[in-house]
Length: 364
Image (cartoon, rainbow, N blue to C red; front, side, top):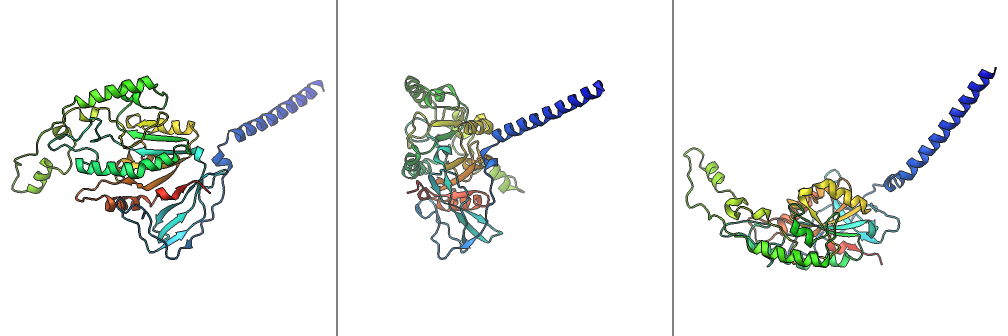
């Protein structure tokens, strides 16, 4: 009998222990649940036809050809942060819906980062310049680089200045790794240089960039062609874009590329280095509590989508808004980027949200 009672008591004890352990585990899981999981909701995907809507991206027609589509819809608010203090209207295109879908969004600014992709300091007086006589860099000619610099100065810099005191982070992405010179110039994921370090870094940058020989080979004077495939032979030896050491000189792409002078860089702004990869960027943004990204920069058809801080990476983990008129695509065969920028933003809008500078505002 005593043995039976002991067995029963032990069974009750183990049962109670398992019950309370389960409650404790459940409570911990609830406490550790992400806000996104805890705040999930059903979205009413109701599409209301819009009557005579104005063209999209029409504020800066010099830089972006306005988007005109015959079918446009208004949808309910998509991002709806509790305590949101940043209004960001956006649009996307859907073939299945047969048109463009627009929706308002309300973001918490303290959960938002503004990221500018590849604001390269090329041909801006800092020393890094397009090699002669046939070198290529950034928008690939000095004339096109100066045109993009004007866009940076007139559109992107004022946009970032307006939001800097409202959002949590302002960030710039650059090629390469965190070399010793740029580590002294810019804040990184884990370090912030002092005033003295920034001054020293600026001196070293000037010396490094201005001591390089920006001299490459000239265009080929003769091209050997076969009788059967002259077109293939021609383009193999004389392609439309060759940014190798042949025309740019060896070591050109290893130089410490600075942020363009057309952007006001503040001490607390953070530089993203492409060579570190996406994972460190994602973890840094997560540690800072970032959920939303307003993406600006260059070039819409290449770096803006496919580099470390491009939207193909960021949109896997964050709510990304492409600021359409704060980006330019490369524009070969044209003297304006507005048509190529329209085309690449329109294609990106199949799976990305696109906004514009005037649509990002603080609620009144």
